[in-house]
Length: 627
Image 1 (cartoon, rainbow, N blue to C red):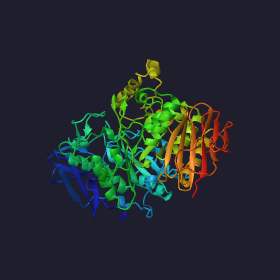
Image 2: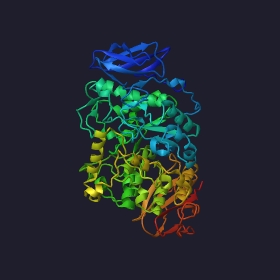
Image 3: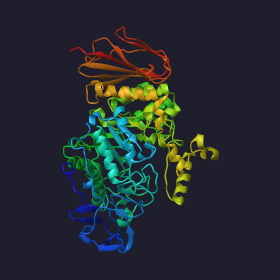
C-alpha cells in the first residue's frame, strides 16, 4: 500500500507500530475515554486532551479486530465517528481495522482517463441476488465486456438496518456490514482494477441519516442552523468550528481514496451544501484529494442541479477545480420527449428536437435564462468547458427510484424509442452514465427502500405516500396504498436485478445494442470523448443529428425520438466536414439489436443521405475525411 499512500489518517483507531492510536474531536467535552472490549470485561482508558477539542492516546495492547467505543464525560459508550467497521450495526461497538493487512494486486493501476469515462451506477444490495461486495466481483467480467470503464457505487457508508439506498448513512467511514467487510470492498476494487475498471463511490456530505448519527454526541458543531436544509440542520462549512467539521469530511474523502484505492468520488447534492466561507469547501476538498493522489488519476464529481460552470473550471481560472458535474438537463429533455412528463421541474422543458440539440451543444440547457419552475434565472454559460466534464444519463437511481412505483424509463415508453435514446446517449461527447440493468431493459423496478426501527419506519412510509398524494394518479387513498412500502422486505426484493433475463428477448438484443455502440465509442476516433469536434442540430421536430469528427473520419448519428418520417442529412456548413461517401455503420432496425426489426430506408447515394424511419430509431453513418 505504501506506493499509493500519500496521506496518513488522523481520526479513529489508527494502527501505530505495535499499538493503536485512538483520536476523536469532542470540543464540548472535558473527558473522553476509549472502552476496549475484553474477555474479562471492558477496559476503560482515558484519552489525553491535545487542545482544540481533540483527544487521543496510543494504546499498546490494542490490535486489529478488537472492538471499542468511547465515553464522553461519563456518557455512552458511543461508537467511533470515524469507525472503519460496525460489525454489529451502527449502534454497536466499532472494530479496529488495519488496511495495510490487505494484499493488493493492482500495482500497475494508475486510474482511468477522465475524458474516456463511461460510468455504470449500481446499488450493491440489489445488483446481484446476494447483494454483497463479493457477489459484485463475479459480475466484473460482464461489465468489462459491456464496455463501461467505471463503476459508480451508490453510498456504502453504514446505515441502520440491513437494507437502504445508502443516503441514510451515519457511520461515514464504515462500509455497510450487510454488504461485507472492509476487505471485501477492497477486494472488489482490486478485482475491478484487474479488469481495467475504475471504481467511484457516491459519498453524502450534505446530511446524515435520522437514526444512529452519533456525530452529534461528540460535537454540536458538525452541523449548523445557519442555512436551511431539506434534512434539518445543514453541514457546518462556514460557522464556528467549521475548520474542524470540514477537516472531518476531507479526512473521510481521503480515507476512501487511500484505504480503498478508489478512483474517485461522486459528491451527493452539493447544491444543498451552503457555504459562505472565503475558500469554498468543494475547492478545498478537490485540491486536497488531487494533491494526495500523487500520479494516480482520481476524479471528484458533483451532483448539482444549478448548472454552475464555476464548479468544473480550474482553480487558476477562478473555478472550484472539480473534475465533473452531473448535467441533468439532457435527462429531463429526453424524458419529456419520450414520456411526456410535465410535472414539477419538467415544466421547464419542451423535449423538442431543437431543445435537445441545444442541450447537447451547450452541455446543459439552462445557461442563465428564466426558469418557470424555480421562478428565477438558472444556470451559467459552460462555454469552454470540455464536454466530458459533464455527466449525462437517460436513467439514474434518483430519476427511477424517486418515482412512486420505481418505474424505469423503458417501462413507460416503447423499446424502439429506448433504442434510439440509447444510441444518442452513448455517442455524445459528454460522459454517459448507465444505471444498472438499463442496458438490457431490466424488468425489475428500482424502488425506494429502508429498514428503520418500527416507529421511524412508520413515519417514512406515511411520508412517502403523503409526498405523492399531490399527484392526480395518487390522490385517492386506494391509489396511495399501491405505493410499495419502503419498509417491507418485498420492496427491496422486487428491486433486485434478474440476470437470467439477459439471455432472452427483448433483453438480449438491447444488451447487444449497448455493447455494439460502446465498442464503437471505445475504438472509433470520432467517438472518443476527448477527440475532435461535436455538433448537434434538429433535422425536424422529432429528429436530432449529432456529428462527431476526428482528423480521419466523421460520424453522423441520426436519432428519431418520436413517430415516423423521412429526413435528409444535410452537410454541416463547416470546412471540417468530410468529403468521402457516407456509409451505414449501425441501425437500430437490424435483427442483432432488435427482436422485431421494421424496414428502415437509408439512401447514401447522394451528397445528402436520406433516412426514412417507420418508428423511432437511430442510424450511424460514417465517412472519411480528406487529408
